[in-house]
Length: 210
Ligand code: AP5
Image (cartoon, rainbow, N blue to C red; front, side):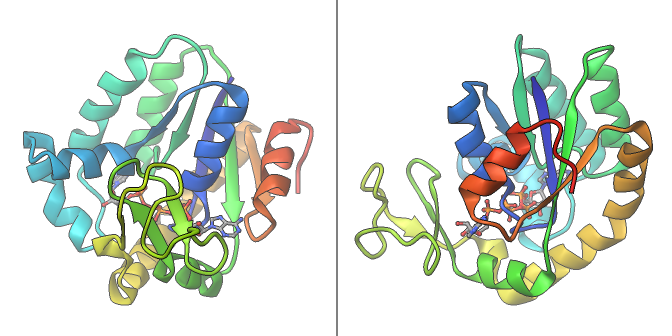
């Protein structure tokens, strides 16, 4: 089973991807996580991507496609994609990589106001990457990860001005991709404002269409 989680910043791709990955026992491939890891480790990829990420811009296709070729080609069974594809070149690249294998594109949708509240209250574990929300999914101890005891931090691109840039960019790029997958008959819309378990159940029910 291959699932593409598509949707705006803050819609829940990472949170849902992690839950689904555990539930379905298939790996999650998150472009954002791979890029952030490379920035942290100061690799060549990280230094190429850093300035784009800080200002909320997309990292150029050639960098992302090379990175994903290495990630997708090493996977044998099913997987979940979070953050890829985001441009038409990336859509085509995924199609080439998938060949005749089928996949579902889950279009997670909700209002921008909710996304801004989610992103400005998001905190992430510096050690294991677990995702929290100060109000919806708070850690038991302030600033400390429940899972590993690591410290929680706010992402550089979760400042309100950068969040607005990321949302605006998403809205300029997303519709043609949504239309394309809709026409292919592989797009399923899911309301991302629902409780997490409900969203997981709807994604797993492959007959569900909003
Ligand atoms: P990336 O990390 O992919 O960022 P994004 O798409 O902006 O998405 P986010 O990670 O911000 O949000 P999410 O949808 O995962 O939400 P989350 O689950 O955390 O990319 C970062 C950057 O890398 C990009 O800006 C770009 O520069 C670059 N990049 C990445 N991929 C690229 C590509 N393919 N091409 C080019 N450049 C690329 O949830 C958000 C918050 O809400 C959390 O606090 C969570 O706890 C809470 N929450 C989520 N769902 C619920 C719910 N149902 N109920 C209550 N709370 C919820």
